[in-house]
Length: 153
Image 1 (cartoon, rainbow, N blue to C red):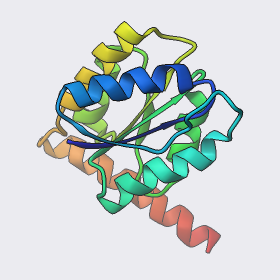
Image 2: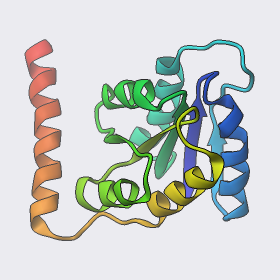
Image 3: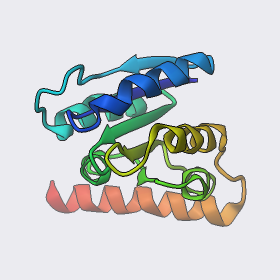
């Protein structure tokens, strides 16, 4: 799978080891930074990661910041992105299976690398359900985005 990843300075200590894990699993990883502990703004990184997911350059995205909250907020501002903050394996796979989550957000200051590895495995192994009621609900999410865009535009 081709995966876009990025994080801010608070996520930096976890992002490098996560990239290594993903590559060891055979995934192609596009790393959008940051590559140091110097302060950066997570919305700028979210734009890059989510841009790859939106355009099909990546199948999934991963954002790592201090808590994961800011990354999830930023990612969900981008049309076509369904980002989830996940600090457990159940929400990581169920988010994909039921809600077609395409970007997962992790808090490097909240969870450790071992748990992050388990969460990412659950996220990447999951597939969106073929059940009609889940697909209908995700289509309604798209309708919400389109309605909001019309109201603003």
